[in-house]
Amino acid sequence: MRVACVLDVDFEDSEYRGPRDALAKAGHEVTVVGRMAGTKLTGKKGKEKVTTDVGIDDVSAGDFDALLIPGGYSPDHLRADRRMVDFARAFFTNERPVFAICHGPQLLMTARVVRGRRMTAWTTVQDDLDQVGADVVDEEVVVDRRLVTSRKPDDVPAFSREAVRMLETATAARR
Image (cartoon, rainbow, N blue to C red; front, side, top):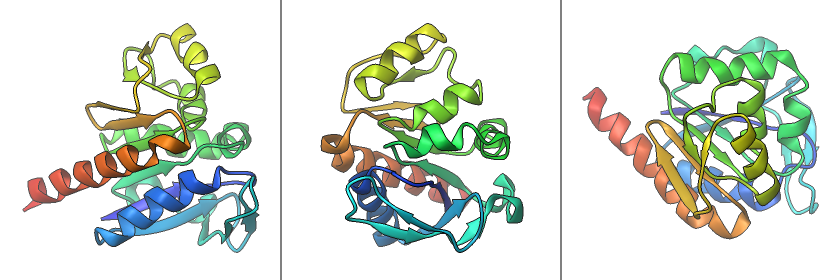
C-alpha cells in the first residue's frame, strides 16, 4: 500500500523514523509529501534529514492508501497551509487509514475531523482535542475506526504496530 507521510521542518525524529521503517519493513511504500518536492528537512533533534519526495501540489489524497503524520513542530507548520489541511481531510472523506502521533492531531483539528473520535496525543494537545469535541484518553495507542493515535516518542513501537496491523487488515480486505 502507498502511505503519504506529510512532513515539514522540526518534525520529531523518532516519530518519523520508527513508523516509516516499520511500514517499509511490512512492504508498504512511504512517500514524503512536503510543501515542495526536493525540500531538505531536518528533524528537531537533528538526527534525521529527509528530502521530500513530492510537493503537495503534485499529489492528491486519492494517490495514497493511508496517511502518516509524525509529531514535533511539523504538524503546526503544516496546518497553516490550506493545501495540507485539505489533503489530510480527504483521507477521512475517503475513509482511508490515518496515523497521527504526538502533535500530529493538530493538523487533524484544523481539518475539523476529530469531533467524536476517541484519540490521544501529546499532553498539551490532549486538552486542545478535548475542547474541540474529541473523546480523549491518555493511552500509548488508540485505534478508532481507521484512525491510530499515540502520545509521544516512547509510544512509537505500539503506534507502529497498530499502523502496520491496520494496513494488513486493509490489504486482506482488498483480496
